Length: 217
Image (cartoon, one colour):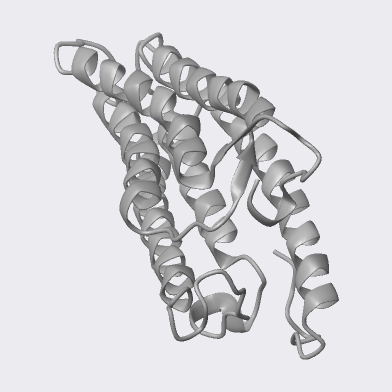
């Protein structure tokens, strides 16, 4: 999607519509589990887990609707597998959380508290850098013209919003302390690292003055 959309594909949707469609099913699933967690009598982390999932996917939907400024299209055949993957991830993590009877390890509570902090800090950092990107797409700069970001952690890495998102996912995994949540972190790391490398190469091919010291992640 966006700068990496395949121009040869005939089935296209607008980037805004496509991105909302990507995240909405996962948001619906997260909200459903959040509602069910109110009456759950389990390990005490069901509501926090579902709430963090709803926060992540709800933030993404709202950003797509009101913050991001799109100018391109998305390949239509990209929608179903990615949307299903996000929805399945949210469902599996929230459902598995309800199957945990209790947490008894002495380190479980400190890791849980640290996980909440990481998740919230990651979401805040992700939103902040999305805001910085959106602020570059102005009529003065040309809303369809790409500009090299210079503020925040963009001074050091190409995609700091990806880094912050991974911090949020790792925080969620620390909250749940489930194997499947940590596998989700590994999956997201692989996916976002690939996009970060590709984006860095794209910037360097388009901008002769792209900072050579800027890292890819």
